[in-house]
Length: 441
Image (cartoon, rainbow, N blue to C red):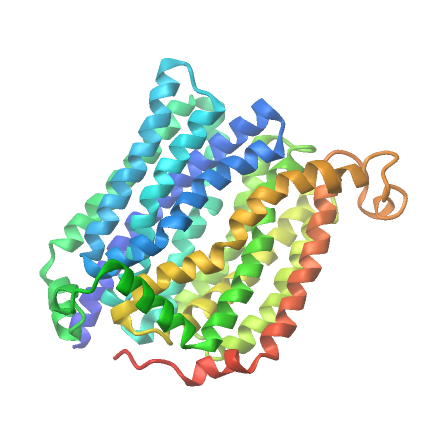
């Protein structure tokens, strides 16, 4: 049994490595296209729209992808998802090669890739329980966070360098190749007999399940979530947290590019994201988190504090240090959230449940993407320009000028994030999740 688990974990590492490469490629494209749109339009709203198109289709279709991940081979879903995502990039590349690339082409290509991401992401997340024993859930979660963070850790530095020495078409080709590598690794793992042996051993293989209708399976996933009040509350809190993080994702570049260049911004973003790398590595190596609710509660305070400090100054070093510590604390919050949910869900429904949870928790992101540009351009930035309403009060502390209204937004929202910790620490049903874990052995 131990030997089998070791073999399965090695297969998980292969799949994980493919996703790491794919995420780095995706980060290159996202960074480059985002900077391109921002430089052409000078509009935070247009920049936010690129992120919105990359995110929203996948979010809306995740319930479909989740049901498919439970009904069909999860590795096959990952392969199809990678292939479709590459097609979205090929769409953009075609217009680049024709010399007629417009902003709306980027929106469409990003949306196509996002649609196929709905097939890939739920299958990838649910497949963890096919490879990894419950004792290694924390380590697997840390590794998955590390892979997802690579697009913020490694990609910005590479993109900042590459955009100065090569055309965007070459960056798109690199990203397409990264999807191909990820798909090929999944193909190899899928053909390995150990996966089938594990499925048979756990008696959770989809072919052994009763074939239910699509909507019945979706409703079953919803009932599974609603039956656990602790998970419902946890999902709500996570959605609020994602709402605030969404503003940081869309407005950090418009804020920093007012006083620095894209290369410096890329390096700064990578250094900030290295905080998540360090904490994810610590979690993966030691896997020492035992009291997840307490960890989440304490770390939320620090997440809010460092979020606020990002907006206090135009000094790049202050922003980088604050961003590093923000991501460092965020990894512990995310790991605790994921483990608490995973321990309370049966493996047989994890695909559809995770897809529904992803939709519910990440609803905060698109709301932030839609509101961020409008609030920055028409509400907060006007407050902190010369003659603005807060120019002589808040402006005397954090400065006035282009982008300082965005800095003020970060300060306000960071304080609100810190308040989430009080809700978490005092909610009984969340505390009960640690003692009501589902036995999946």
